[in-house]
Image (tube, rainbow, N blue to C red; front, side, top):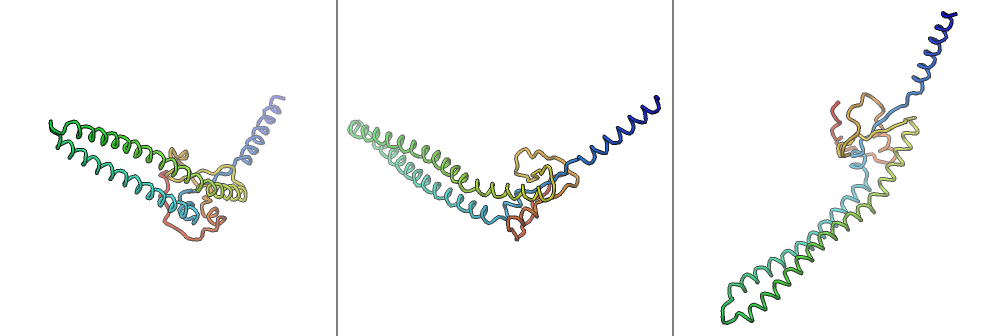
Length: 192
């Protein structure tokens, strides 16, 4: 009887192990940097952001130049201050000081607004692109029967995957699903 129970447990263990082995989930990985580097919409969006950033910086640079010019005028006015013109020049210096403070505030506000505008534009431009890529990743993962897909791109702050051995690299399939045919230099893969 005891032998029969042992055989039963061994058989049940083998059956359980076989079920566990067949239930293993397939893993895949993708390099999102490579996908985005080859996606025309992402390139266009990046160019648009860079142009916007340059425009905002040019506006800020013009204000800084105006500030520097007014500062030089105030310093020159300060040098002309004497007992004879103390009242008149003093009022002019006070007015210039107020103008400089106002301009300094405008520069700070312009920098903050520029940063916000660029962030908003980035969201507007990249949200649909990210959704498109996510849909393609999901479709390819389902086609390949993958349970998990890890992003191995270096720029993915923290990169949750520090080691992988094999798995399906679906980068090319996702690029194909998105209609990307051009190939760019692959970013370096993480060290194993």
